[in-house]
Image (tube, rainbow, N blue to C red; front, side, top):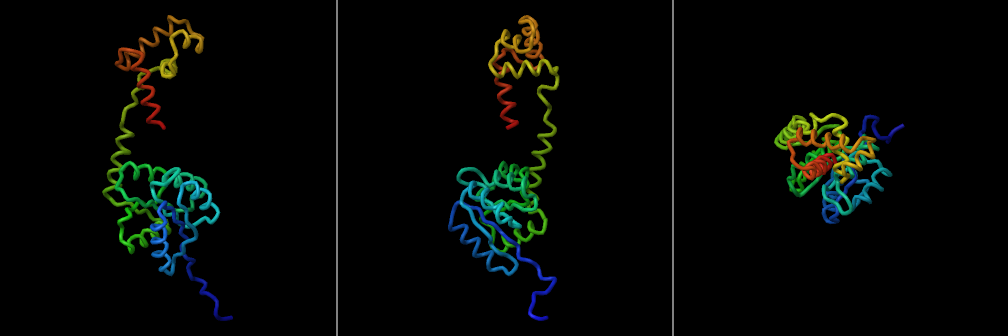
Length: 223
């Protein structure tokens, strides 16, 4: 039988585009559609649309703008990669933002490129991440790794506290008085006062209000 496609013919790379600017989406789509090994299978202009449409078509690559109405490309990347790890995410942005790069990589993005990239380079980037490769320039990656190492090396400010003292510190952060903490933990008010004095000393703080501020800062880092 003749006329069939060769058995070794590759399937086109299926790409989904997410950008809140229609002109940008059309331009990127036109660029990719000129390539024989690529096809655009869908588009979205918001984070909500992307999260609804991408799981339906399951593309090989999702090209995501970092900044989107109703969310962010990083958020979309994180959720998509969680449910569909086979989808490679390529972040596209107008800004060289180290924080966004860090967040994108932690969310599972395979690449991060600026919108100023040349068309041929963008096509190459899509091919790279589609084949399982990573596309992060050495300078950006180096800065991110330094940040990661710094975060890992940062000492735990609460390392010297006992589990009981940590629990009491958390309750101070919730605005509880010594009496309320004692009732919560079934401790005498005087005992709580002694714990508070000890933890303030270990943290080199003078007032419980400073302890409450510290708790708020630590919670902000976690989230």
